[in-house]
Length: 245
Ligand code: 16G
Image (cartoon, rainbow, N blue to C red; front, side, top):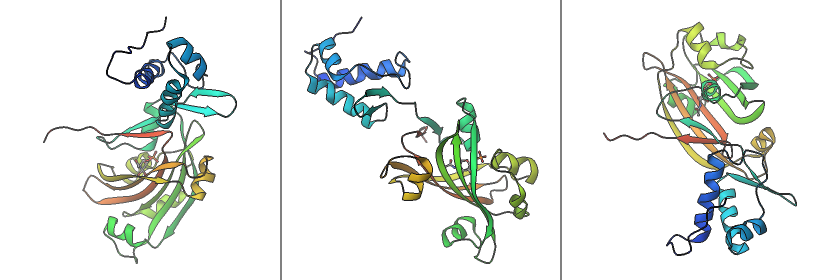
């Protein structure tokens, strides 16, 4: 059964169709990877023009709910991974809570003199070396984010010997170093991926990414981490909880 679109309703027809298709995706009636009806089929099924059907599909594609494959058709995209910004969580926790196996490829793990931004964030001078940890973060083996962390606390050099391919930084900090991630200041902005990110993520050139800067503080409110990261905008969404003051 297809629900008819209401032509007398003030909302444009393409918009009504878009919301109807969105419902099917969100409700799981159409599964990720499944091919959806073509423009022609939709226009016949709902008695609308192909232009109207095209507009609805185009907007859902821009929103990331659908993707097109040249010459094949339009498919349902994988749902985006949400990170709630009200609670301080780690990448591993975010993935596990959604049933994805987290992973990482360590690209750099070394002692460096901190950049000006890292010094400012961590409240240190360039003479105080930090551990630089650069990781490609994976969910079910698929690259999702590139994270460059600058870490500074008493005994931080121990991190050079840790295995970050298979374990969580925040777990190691809590369990072995007594550093408990307690709160963070985080900025999120939109950008296009760099050439390197494009290659590491295996995404088309000029794809959008979400750029983050996070300063995380321990249980004594000391900053221990300054991380710059790029998250794939097609796979990740940040969810913000608002309350009245
Ligand atoms: C998150 C944090 C990152 C932190 C990492 C620890 C953002 C933007 N970044 O990805 O700053 O280093 O979690 O993850 O949220 P892990 O404990 O799984 O290694």
